[in-house]
Amino acid sequence: MPESFLTIADKSFSSRLIVGSGKYLTNELMVQALEASGAEMITVAVRRVNLSDRATESLLDYIDTSRYFLLPNTAGCYSADDAVRAARLGREAGLSNWVKLEVIGDEKTLFPDNEALLEATGVLVKEGFVVLPYTNDDPIMCRKLEDAGAAAVMPLGAPIGSGLGIQNPNNIQIIKAASSVPVIVDAGVGTASDAAIAMELGVDGVLMNTGIAGSDNPVEMAEAMKLSVKAGRLAYLAGRIPRKMYATASSPIDGVVGT
Amino acid sequence: MLNGETYKTDGPLTIGRLLCHLDIDRRRVAVEHNMNVVKKTNYDSTIVNGGDAIEVVNFVGGG
Image (cartoon, rainbow over all chains, first blue to last red; front, side):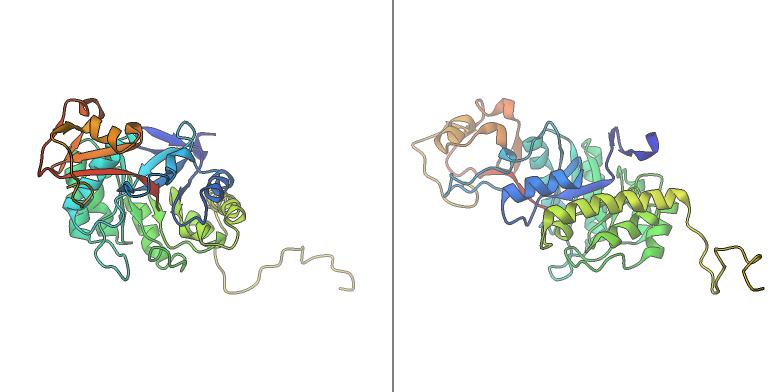
């Protein structure tokens, strides 16, 4: 069933859910949650090695890279130059040319700096990267990113870690209608219904981290997200009924006893 | 400078030797030498001199 695959650039994934590896209380809990999520693509951050405490375990001791595809991010970068630098390091550390490109414009909202994001996208595409930019839910910005060579566009549903759900479903639908690259809703999902709503809008996938890692039971929430992404996709493909103001009876109106 | 802090060595050495001194598995990291990423295949031929800036990074959990 090819429809069930998420294809970005030259890779296909059987899960439309992409999950982050941050904020887990323990690495063991992260491993269980990754497993329960059914995701095949996992985001990771690039940071300085802790030289004062070499006993710190490496994330890669826990993530089976033969099973999961790692997507390095440029989180924490506030300029195009820093993001490009982080992307190049991530490529060398992971030996893949994919990057989840973030250029943050503001500490409080973590909203993207659009101009810098576009600039960094252009630079990295020219260097052969498969660029997946985290962007705001602006159809014009998404068009510019696609024109610059982005392999997918990843509009936010709501601010990172906010759990507010899809704040502007209409924009997400407009972005999907206008894009010829995959659209991944990235950030803002707080619970399973948020993920289902995103998928029902017709997007190609959902990326989340805090919604799972920050829940009381990340393993159960990861499974809930897996199911909701599938449910939302199926519902989108099945085609929902139109919204109507008044009731339409489900049972036959003829033959009611007593009439 | 190593990861933003002063680091003393006994003289010039290769990236490969530096990682060995630091007890770092070279397969798990990426190294930047004076703002340029060093390919893993060049670790043993790239010389670090006094005053150079080295960054050694790895993957950590992130979203």
